[in-house]
Image: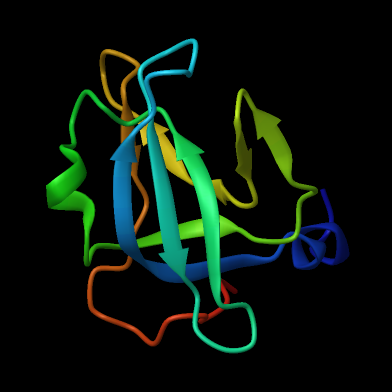
Length: 109
């Protein structure tokens, strides 16, 4: 991948404003509402992060997500962004987030 291809992937930071169980998903997941600030606003995401996180502990947490992929219908829920994570030693998702609080909407470079 060259630099231009990487630049086309729009990865932004946002703050989770709501997190709800997603029992309709095939694998355990949460429905997330993430605020990316203006002009993006709040976008929804489905995330299979139930191993390390509880829904109420996610609210207020900053996360990184790809915001320029096409929305994806997951059962009855439309996931608008791809929340990013890395696998732990067991393959469970650990969320990607900044070390320090940064303005919502900031773009990864």
